[in-house]
Length: 356
Image (cartoon, helix red, strand yellow):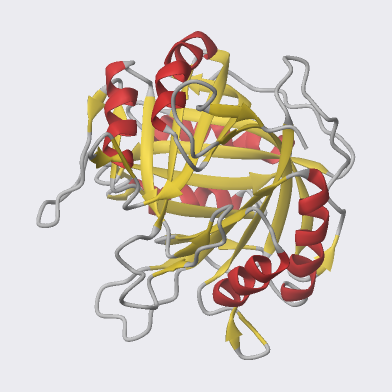
């Protein structure tokens, strides 16, 4: 199946509550009740929101309230049917809606248009415990993407989520084989089109999304700046922009960890929000795939930073990102029609159109 879909992403914090229960729990329950094709809850390591309150695992008193991101994918009517309920829950934070192509089942040859400076973002959804060619599926998939010379791919492990409306919750002492994960890959449309049939053959239930993106930097080389953005999209949603930075956890800038320095500088600059997620496997640029290994003395895992703001805010944020990625990293930008949540609920509360 090849159809248009919506990808709904929420940004909040782990200890946020609504009506006496955790917001994250309430969101996943909505995704299950509406039987979304797939959803995943990701826990960040560092970040901040519109209030600029730091959330980090590096400080014990702050590590109990880390940033969280949820991603849900399904056909447009089903996502839109759930929006009123989600609006009521999201009394703070940010919700973005991104248009994508959803590919499931047998994958026919795909022709993707090429545009100047623009590439394609491929997201692959599968379970933690899925196997392919006798190994964890995510390892086999990342190696295949590397062979097809995609610019980068990062595996993000979910801690909760749904598949076909069924809850897949992670357990502290469980194998968590069915808990969903995401593999986010960036590459040319032609390379991704060539890889898709091979990818589909690896998985018993393939589920992919395709989105347009722009590669701004690769391994320190500036290729393009974030493009101009209209005030609203054709449906009237206010258009914000998103920067994504793919790097390694060991990456440094002037001796400081890149992810830590990025959050500190963006927070001080007044950026609306940014979240760093730790990957478990992946690569970017010319690096070989790498990640978590048993018995390894030092961890060498990828990280992904997501920065969401108005176009003016993204232009200011990109200047910081450009400086900090002078030697390493993969930087992309894309448009994200967005709802911005207000703290008030009821009456005029809920979610505002996030126009710049």
